[in-house]
Image (cartoon, rainbow, N blue to C red):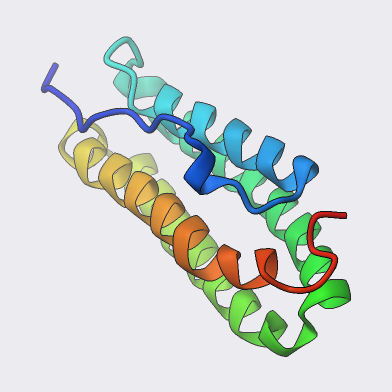
Length: 135
């Protein structure tokens, strides 16, 4: 099996100041890291990606609820970003289901890692700075 990109590690600079959302971000990191595990078989890749998508959708709903309360002015943009992520992830899942498997794995894992980290550090920090965001 090919060497995969480095796994994501949680650090305090990823905190959005909300325990529930930080916990969900940590869970997403674990799921993405599992997807990137060298021990994951090609047959299980699509299932693992489906798990990431399902958990991300649950998280996005919780996050959008917080944004609506704390920073409604950024909600529409955040929803667009979340929708684009889900669409891209479903595209990858479809490609896995059509046999691209191992050849696509590194790109998908890199996308998931990069997107999550960049999203937390840039977009999510906008609601972190809103008054009362840590509630």
